[in-house]
Image (tube, rainbow, N blue to C red):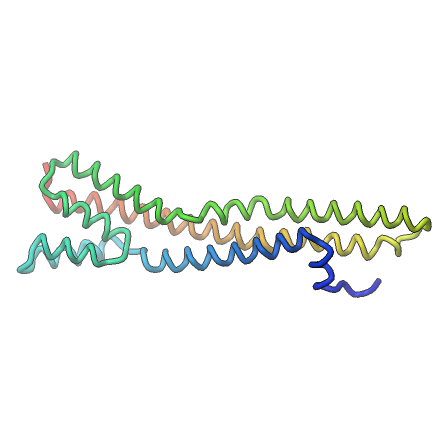
Length: 205
């Protein structure tokens, strides 16, 4: 059986072309999400510590609000939104900060569905390509009019590449999706903790 030529496979298999596109798509969104998470992640203690210093300084609430608005983390944005509405009742303040938390969470979730979807569907696309390739190999066997595995061995080997390609796309996408979802959960907890502690710090009633 001759060597399998990669470029020839791409010319003959539309499935592999789709897999290449999906792999580029997965990598692009993963890098974009990594960059966003890196910039928007923050810890409640650090943000509230910075806010406390601003409140104790000469600028007080205005300085704390400006500091939060300049900080890129989602926790700081939630805390800043709470400072912006500091004069409201405790219930109103908690609801407003919860709405801001949901807004920031949506920003974290952006494009994660793409990674999750690729992790689920890529193996099926690869399997589809394999099935089509095997059908083609047996069609060639029937057309040749002679038996023996040599007639279909090359075609089946090439067809199985589609399954391998599907797994190569799906496994990293699924791992990255779970990784980002874990970070999302941690950031959600940080925002919830910061919200609860800020309400106490402000002494809202």
